[in-house]
Structures are given as structure tokens and as C-alpha cells.
Amino acid sequence: MDKGLNKVILELHEGMIDIPFNRFQEWALHIVQKLIPFDSAMWGSGTYLPEDIHSMYLFNQPQEMLDVYVEKYQRDDFLRKAAILNAGTTINIRDLVTREEFEATEVYKDHAKRWRMEGLLCTVLTDQASGLLDFISFWRADPDNQFSDRDRQRKELLMPHLVAAWRNRKFLQVRLQLAGRSEDQGGALADKMGYLQSVEPGFIRALRRIWPHWAGSLLPQDIINLIKKAPGQIQIGSFEWDVVAAGDLYFVRARATALPTNLTKREIQLIELAISGASYAMIADKLTLSSNTVRNHLQNIYRKLNVTNRVELMRRMNGRGLNF
Image (tube, rainbow, N blue to C red; front, top):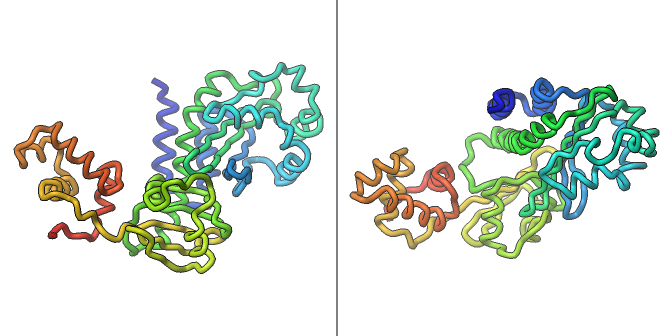
């Protein structure tokens, strides 16, 4: 068991609630730095369909470094290409080329050496459903202190937690600004053209209920039209789509407006017990059923209500009575 790794993961998810939005990435990298020492870093997000970068946070590196890299070296960067090709796997520069080969490249002589990037770890995560992409690079300044395989493995394990914590922190920030408004099925942040920049799983499911063949990072045209009129809302299918401005972006959320009419009386009883916090065993005892039967019934209810667990079920039922 890697206790250090587990401690960092716990801190990340606790910090999602406590750390101010505008300090979260800096704070998160300081936390990780205790586990995987590095001197500078880059944390960005964007889309790979089409390929575009939406945001970039630089840790102990100047903006000039990024500007020069994008202009001169990004297109032919072999480390970047390897990280994208092997999305989900952390790439160590020393696993791609020898030290001598790296020092002979133009990107090292004219860029990496100047900005003290002697050791490099890079990880890319992609989401096929939304077309979104997140990436984080760590750099060390001492050529004699290269990243180890353990460093690489730890970063690879941490990457999904870093991305999830940052995504959830962004949505928490928006929801704090919208405090007092009703719960929703899921939300997304998009730019003024309708390209996704961050998205919750429930929002993807809602989209595909209405637009079954939707894929990629560009929202359906009906939602794009709504963004252009923001703030506003529109009823499409069984969902109300709501858009509000959130700084330079737009927060789009889907709210189910009606419950399915094909819920049975037994399913209604199960829902009432489930959202009250009753365990499988308690529900089974109350309704004289086996625990396996209760699980099967709840899975069927989840499918009907387009949710995946009890937390989402409680959100779905928020403010809605079951007396029908």
C-alpha cells in the first residue's frame, strides 16, 4: 500500500471543498510536489475533437516559455505526441530517448535547456464521450536527478484524481454562485461557440437521451442557440435546458421536468425507502423481498430515471412527490 499516494488523493478531494477556486491548481500541485518532487509544471485542458487548448496554468514557469513552445516546438514535440498516443499512461522522457539523444534535439538546445526542463513527465487524459482532454507535465531542473519509474507510476495513478478534483471544483464554484436554485441532472461549461470545456457524466447521459447520436465536444445546435441568448432556458424532450453566464464561459445544465409514468407501485415504494437512506437489508425486510431482488429493482429504477446510483436518485427526486 502506498500511504503517501493515498494521503495526497485524500487531501485533493478534501481540498476541493475548502480551497478557493482561484488557488486550487497551485495548491494541488504543491500537495503533489511533496510526493513527486518537481521544479515546475504545466496543467492544461482543451479538446482533441477539434484539437484546441482552453486553459493553461503554469507553475514556476513564465508565460514566455509557453508562447515560444507553442510557436516553435509544439507541432513536432515527440513527447507530446507520445503522451497523446498513449493517453492515460504517464510518459517519462528517458523512456523515449537517451540523454545524449535528447540533448542533441533542437527542442532541448533552444527550449528545454533554457527553461531548465532536464527531466520530464507528461500525462494526457482524454474523454471519448465529450472530446475533452486534460494534460499535466512535470519538469526537473537538475539533469542528474531524473524522474524514477516510481515517480512515473505515482503520477499516472494521481492524474485521474487531479483532473476529477479540478473539474468538480469548477462546478462547485458555479453552483455556489447559483445557490438556492433547484438541483439538476448534470452540468457543463462551454465557450460562446458551444464547445465543451468541462462536463459532468449526468449531462452526457441527458444529452444522449435527446440526441442519441451526439458525440464530440460541440454541443447540439439547439443548445448553442440558447448560449447565444444567455441567460435563458428551453424545454426539449423531458429535460429543461438552462444556460447562465459564468465569467467568460457558459454553464449549461439539464433538469428533468417530469418523472416517468411507467413506475410501478412497488418501484415507488422502493424509491421512497432508498432516498430515506434505508439499506438493502432494511428495504428487503420492509417489503418482504430478498436483498438481490431489491438490487435488481433499484437497477431497473435507475435505468428508468436515467441515474446510476442513490446520490443521483436523490437529486432526481429533489422536490418531487411520489403521490401519483
